[in-house]
Image (cartoon, rainbow, N blue to C red):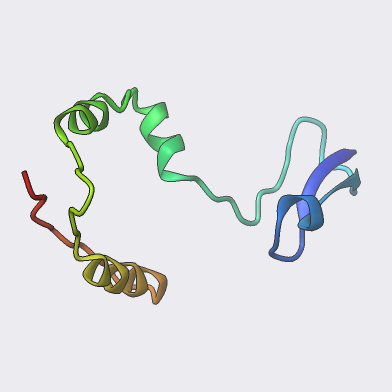
Length: 94
């Protein structure tokens, strides 16, 4: 059967392959060893339209010179990358 797959990380143009793979175990059946889902996929499946995000974008005005604590946000990102949980609440200047 023809199928896409990847066996290494990297840019899609370099890592993604497409070609012939062994047929599934029986007609109409595919054995899944690993599967991933993006948060956006699960939200869309549940019917979330992102309206809260659009509303927040309209309410936020950033002026030249406004500063945000990106170091704290980067620390939260590092915690998530390390397998933990990261959450940062920041005050946005008005």
